[in-house]
Amino acid sequence: MNSFLRTIPFTWKNLVRRPLRTGLTVAGIAVATFLFSFVESMRDGVVKATEAGAAETRLVVYRKNRFCPFASQLPQSYERSILRIEGVKAAVPIKIVVNNCRASLDVVTFRGVPDEGYLQEHIAQAQLRSGSVSDWQSRGDAVLVGSALAERRRLRAGDRFDAAGVRSWVAGVFDSDDAQDRNVAYAHLGFLQETAQRGGTGGIVTQFNVEVDDPSKMEAVASAIDEAFAHDQFPTTTRPESAFVARAARDVIVLVRFASIVGWASLAAVFALIANAIALAVRDRIRDHAILQTLGWTGADIAWMVVMEAAMLGAAGGAIGAIGAHAAIEFAHLNFTMEGVSIEVTASNMATVAGVVLATLLGAVAGIVPALSAARREIVQGFRTA
Amino acid sequence: MSTIECRKLRKDYRRGEEVIQTLQDVDIDIHGGSFVALMGPSGSGKTTLLNLLAGIDRPTAGTITIGGRDIGTLGRNALAAWRSANVGYIFQLYNLVPVLTAYENVEMPLLLHAISAKERHQRVTEALELVGLADRYSHYPRQLSGGQEQRVAIARAIVTRPTLILADEPTGDLDRTSAMQVMDLVVRLNKERNQTIVMVTHDPSTAARAGRIVHLEKGKIIDAAEFEHAAQVAASGAHR
Image (cartoon, rainbow over the protein chains, first blue to last red):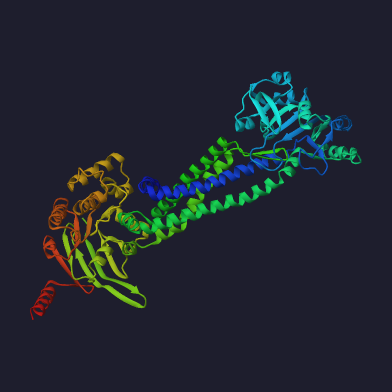
């Protein structure tokens, strides 16, 4: 073991004193790992947005067979009927206005919510970065903007904000653990109804968010709601919020799954790149290895040096790529929004660590075959070959 | 001091179906502390014999006993450990590791020895001073002349204080002045440190500095009388 440790400085020198070869290899690994970590972060965002927690209690009531906030129109008066259904704790009518109904990276989503109750409770759980709820309450055109949207559009409290035909005033910016909240601007329901209808009748909302008093009753309550309006002019489809997000984001989920394959393929590229670099290095150093063995280093020492060098290349490239992906995601504030539903690409520590660890392990594995061939080569044959 | 005894030493190489006998039943004794030059034409088996003595190649048959130990019976790792402790090897083409400085090249064999960093530094410094390269510690091989590279290689060969130094045409790639310096150094190691030296050379003037010259031809050792006769025959043939 001691002689293995003593090989580390030599291996390190072999890497840093061949800067062109090391730099090119590390750059290739970094690009591939960047891609992998980025895609894994995207997948993480999808999983977080669509996974149903055991304690999920929120249903989303949407217009049946409608898939865009523009098309989902429900009478606000449904609120009273929903509240009468057994198991329903609260029902919040929400008007959603978006500047683009299709999947896009820069969608502005306005959520119109009642003046009292919902937002006060919601923001109490979140954290206001600037402004205040009372400022929001005091102005009809005020919006409270989620932190991700604010960063993307560089909005601050006191700014005027124009999007999707809605001209509003930023009353504050808030942070939240919920990606859906971080990417919306909360407006007054009446203001949004008025603006969206362009002077037409109010009383129309996009959806209801329904809180159920017991997670085990989710399915029964959803069925009861849809049953209640099945023969009405505006039939509904009610789903748990996670299922609602998953349905709305189905195209993005398919895309992310495909990208995930690309991400794993990029790891295969890491393997091939390191294997190629190490195989060439071993071929170039046949004489060096023969010299070291003449000096008394064993074949196992040589094999260890080769594997360690491959692992170091993987670790360096993996760290640059994965940390680069982490920083890029943090900086870019990427967010897919479709049909008013947001899937945020958040920098995932797990994806970063996975990128570094996998690149290192792949490096070590890629080094095994060249290491064995270097270790098994007879010394005299090594001098002759070189 | 290592006394070397080779008995019935044979080394065959295969080239496809053909078997090439490089050494044939070589018997030789080399006393500890002596300086022996191996001479002979190309292909006579000099380097093969040197490689077998160094434990970097294995005989097809026969035994090599060095310091009372039959090195043919040692496994790969044991043989590596034996080389590390007992052998210093000087190559014709220096064979320094290009990414390491002169200091680091000399230090490399010592990394296998259980000594402190301080003692390692002291030994490397001593070795480099002995070969007259105290001012070239941080130079890479590409920054040294051929003679300087060979002196670094000698420092690397002696830094572990081996009992046996094997040199394969150490002056073969050097100009006359550098060759003289290297040979002075080799002779000094033999005389002052009493290290056993076996050196392969083509050059009679280099061989003349050894205490004993062993001639090889077609894989066999020929005695002095045979050698004189062969030399006379060759000379008369050339004269005619």
